[in-house]
Length: 503
Image: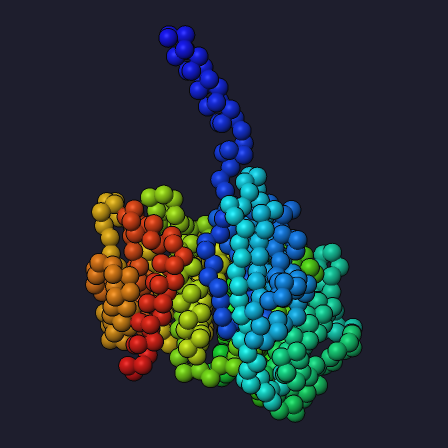
């Protein structure tokens, strides 16, 4: 009998050694949050797939991630791009989907994590595009490809000329917009030199709805990201700039440097229609240069989507800045099982923005992904957020966070407001009531938020809501669930809309 027990112990030890020495047994499974089917989707929609860990770039391709129509036919005209965080993948159509049709976005089990772990199960998301909208009827856009001819614009250390990038992207934007029934006028359609006065005359005689000047940026070799300029004093310019900036940042994954108001922009001065200048990325940065050369379809799609959003919007006149707390090197609170607050905040914030946009509210984001231009632990983080909202002339600022405490027993929802602003208090109460009602969370009430940096540096009524406690095991589990996040976002959006209706 003793021999039997010794033999059993040896076998068990051998199995244990085998298990812990096999790399694939240690590799966590690759997954994404559950993705509900979508309806009323834009025909130029860019999808962002977020995995739970870094992905093997060699498995990200159109054979493993693909789109089918309702008949099972492959939709071939799309790009798949792994983003800088190595966890996010964008799927961008190279031409619009058919209006009013159902498609499926599918991820097969050949997609793998960097550590070799296989995807837990294949994923399929169905989406149905919106029917043809008359919002673009009788609309005209002037597209300005910066530089040209003897004016090379910025020339990168590798010899890439800005004029060529500008023209290539401009033509792609024109093709997208033409496909949506919009009339397009170019300031140049080939490599010819056109002076600013001639471009200005084309714009002012066009009777167009908007003027989009497409450019590249330059600075130090580490400068990166996309930004959009508009002239002070025109709310239509602000709306156009915000829509294009947010759409490009979302479609490309480039760092969102925000919108920049100015009293003078050479390419825009003297133009009498809504106009913006969008420097797409930095030719002085090798990484940005590579993106400009290899991802022009994604950039053009983002610009087009932004223009379409601006044209279609019959806005209420309100602009809401949505701020997803933390981000980049700053994870925020860490949950009891390691959930990062920054990820939960962003997921909820993007859903809130989408819901508000569907209700004809102008939305400005302080960040749309985890690529941020600030460093951890510096005031530049909060200043950047305030600058985005202030420059966009947002009417209200809603900051989305989640809480933490030394005790795991702390739980519930609370919302902070500026005591000097009756509007801030009223908005905070509307959001608080909606969250508590939807989530059945403990009501911790609305509280004095005057100590917050944003309370003193924002030019508009500001609130900060703490949806729940990541240090509470039950609430962390809820907050890490995509359905719960969607419910929280729905509640915040309803609170904002209820507040706006009461004005």
